Amino acid sequence: MTKRVVLAYSGGLDTSVAIGWIGQATGAEVIAVAVDVGQGGENLETIRERALACGAAEAYVADAREEFASQYCMPALAANALYMDRYPLVSALSRPVIVKHLVRAARQFEADTVAHGCTGKGNDQVRFEVSITSLAPDLKCLAPVRDLALTRAAAIDYAEAHGLPIETTKSSPFSVDQNVWGRAVETGFLEDIWNAPTKDVYTYSDDPSFPPVEDEVVIGFKAGVPVTLDGVAVTPLQAIQEMNRRAGAQGIGRIDMVEDRLVGIKSREVYEAPGAMALIEAHRDLEGVTVERELARFKRLVGTRWSELVYDGLWFSPLKQALDGFIAETQRYVEGEIRLVLHGGRAVVTGRRSDASLYDFNLATYDEGDSFDQSQARGFIELFGMQSKLAAARQARLSQD
Ligand code: ARG
Image 1 (spheres, rainbow, N blue to C red):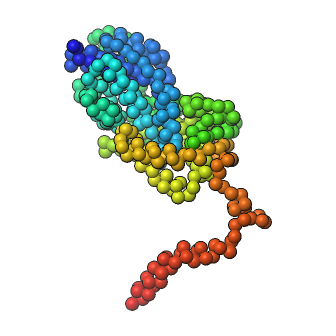
Image 2: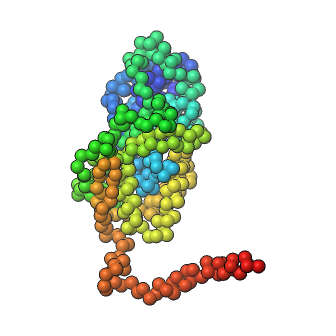
Image 3: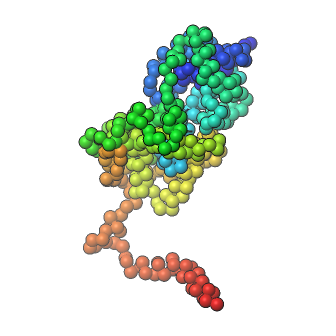
């Protein structure tokens, strides 16, 4: 039986050429798999036909948008996941769901290898391959750009020599990866970290310097998941899409940073994630109202660690899965509504209400008639500060000698 390789296919030059390139190098048939994670752009049927025209034995398209939104983006929202406190894990979140579909295709078409188009310098190669081996330890991995020396120049020559139906002239100045949770832009003139991003870098968001009138939205949550927007029921996918549109119009969620890659390189990244950043702002605020203090403090540590694990390609790892269990438990009472004002690059919470609120007006009020007994504070502070007082007294005593 001919060997088969499943290829993560984007429809772009590199993976189109990789179809024939892999065939030549390995003698295998290539099954091209395109996964829709809400990246927009070309119609997936067009992409499927291109894969076949480039020599794929089979081409398979998976609509993973709802799955990606509910099983990958929502856990990231529950964790308030921001790598290095800033990056909402856009690409890192999509790799495991893409791999799920690649592995499924590998089983269906009896392939023994899964291939992807990543280079040898980034995080994505790690995420693909660690996810593949975690789900299917028996499958082999192949990265034609990295392992079979498929350079851009070689790809252009190959495409032209074989008359592949793909543009070889129109080369984007950037490397872009996008999905419904956001968009990542790197390389080109952004590699000089003093260069400011130009307008053409952004497509998910408008310039925040010239915003339209402010936009007020009420987001309803249940168990940490957005379930209504202005009172209208939404799926996770719809919540993200709608917030991308509304927060994007206000230029919210633009991030320009130098980031620590897993492979040891610092790299300049420009992101836009209007919906994700607005939702995280709202979700975090609702947690402030509904999550008990000690749980909330510990959860912030867990969220940071979760983000690092996901960034590092360990989505399917035991620790990440165990932390998922913890985070899910913290979301039990994260329900209610958040009023968010979107304007000029900022998403600002201006109100919150919840049946599961731990905020007690009668305890908090500075007006007459509160139920908080202030006379007890004195004794509390006396005991709470006891060990600091003893240590300070010792320091004073011993440093005099
Ligand atoms: N640096 C980001 C990450 O590792 C974005 C990667 C985007 N990938 C790309 N091929 N442009 O998550």
